[in-house]
Image 1 (cartoon, each protein chain N blue to C red):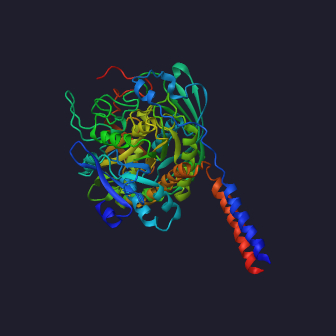
Image 2 (image 1 turned 90 degrees about the vertical axis):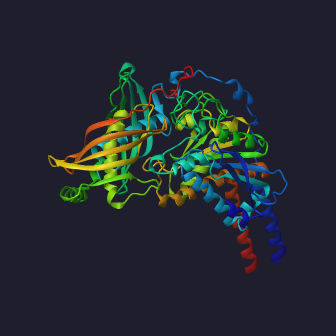
Image 3 (image 1 turned 60 degrees about the vertical axis):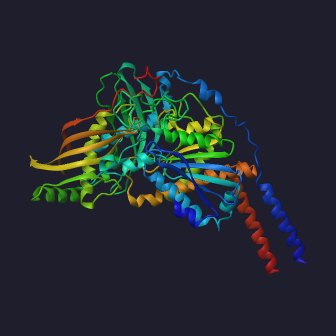
Length: 287
Length: 324
């Protein structure tokens, strides 16, 4: 008796499945735009184009906020980076921009940060980044009070590393960290992080609204004689700028101790090449 | 690649469709069922247009492997392969890729390996600035020593010519153009030029965002979605832009892991997870494009929810039937 009833059910179910998947016909015609490919040879692109240059809210996942947030990462690593501490931008949650005319552009950011080595969530931090208005810009000015950083305690490991390197008979050296396969020998990892912290000084100084720096590799590291209770190293680092896609070479003289943190005593290197076609203007006549 | 073809002749064939500057073959794998002598709709995927982005060729290989492993048992995949062909180029910039494998000092090479024209001393052109899509207008360098050098003219490079000729002759056939890069964890839509919008921008965004969600579900990694001028930088002459301008409705650049910690030097232990999440993203887009073309279905996610509901009703009915 229940069979015919269930057959009806099955019929209704199958009907329901068909009805449950309505299709929406294409709302916009997909026509190719051959005109655009041929007729736009050079396009005047006004300097304000990057879409954010009016005061106010920025889209957090768009590039202007992302670039400014990366600068905050560099700043934090100059102050808190160490062989056992590497701070990474996790997300930009909110951003706004204030145009200060000659004084420059000021970004206000709410970002979430992570300490990568211990995988610690540092929570949300507020930051301000001021890019100078002048041609001959100094480093961007950053303010980032971030309470989450108090959580980090790496004293024990740092002391152990310091003692080991300070009393070692042979000065440490290494190259290609990471190597072509992304591999880093475990004993070199702290020196990789130290290099990244040192590189952050350069990346911070070289940053502007048209850069996005990461350290690509430690090409070479050589330990020098300890001086004034600080370990010293010669670093050759490769920086990658996302916007120009260039690899920039920098040589750094770095000192470090657990108490003193990271210092960069000397730098010698390649600023990002200037002659690239700027992002937001039409190219000048062919070189 | 040869083994993949010999061991799976009913599914895979390969073909040389161009030559690099140094005379190496540029090869695609054509993956599909019942494709003999039939002009089917198709999906295009290329990897390794930039030499140093090693995770990209790794992903193309992973993608092919996943298809081979599942096409017999996965009904949906089987259906899609009957309806469409997948053209997969594991390495487009073969010269640059092989150059980047020579030693540590060549590892971070990006461009092709063409010899410089007169008045220039540096090799290579950025292949992803060399396509005929608003060529040379924005986000490029005219300096042949720079990494975004767009070449002496549009499609000056043999590698770009190969894609232009092959894809260009099949524009009506190709439903979707996917080009795989690293790094940055991004899904980029056309166009790279800040003043032009694709007419199907909304749909490209919606599908891209859903694909990014599918990618995040695998290992928790965020992928940002948007046009290049919005989320990364303006650029011109990209293959993605060219494909869209030619009329291929869906065109995406995948920028795989990571976000800067290792960059292009992605460690071995991240290869598999990076490929797993990228596969889900690519498969999502391919499935959407397929369903749109063959079932006229364009809603995202609703169909699967409805189907789940009705499946539950059916199951409970059958259970009741057997209990009575």
